[in-house]
Amino acid sequence: MHLSNILRSGYVQRWHTNADLAHIAETNSSHQWAATMIALALDPQASRATILAVLTHDVGEMWAGDLPYDFKRDNPDIASRHAIFEVEQRNAALAPLCIEGPDLNLVGIADRVAAVLHVAQFRPDIMGNSKWARDTHDVRKQLAQCSYPGAADVLAAVDRAIACT
Image 1 (cartoon, one colour):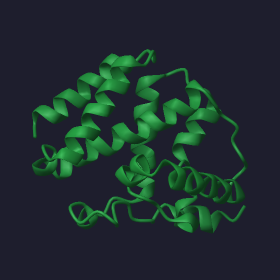
Image 2 (cartoon, rainbow, N blue to C red; image 1 turned 180 degrees about the vertical axis):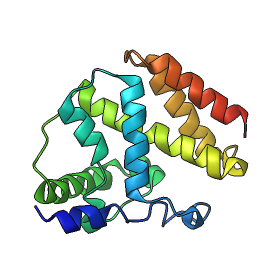
Image 3 (cartoon, helix red, strand yellow; image 1 turned 180 degrees about the horizontal axis):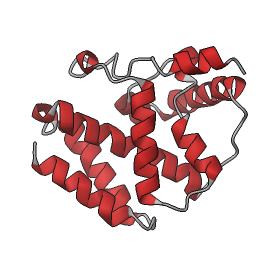
């Protein structure tokens, strides 16, 4: 583990491939922190390994790069191969974390909620376009269907953020 590389990975810019968002300068470190707070709001009793997974879920992007969510959704084979490589890079930088099932799902939901809330805060004017309307619908559906203890509160926070757009 090279601590300097792990810390440097936090400076990786999110949204660099999105013309609507590239200028808002969100870093992976700020995104991972937000996703971790969301995960804790969803499940205050989440395991240490799960919280560490959320906190470090994008560390591998320093070496693997990132793909836009809608590209990953529309190209699952490419997304799957890229995700494997990104996890390999993350695990090379940090001790591997073995989580699955609901714990892995918590990472994914927290990641998507963080993205929707960030865009609602910094680019509310684009929340009504087809891409963000679809992403918001998907996030709301995931939250409504999941069984995490804090899901209703997080869903209410998403609804309040969207109402302000």
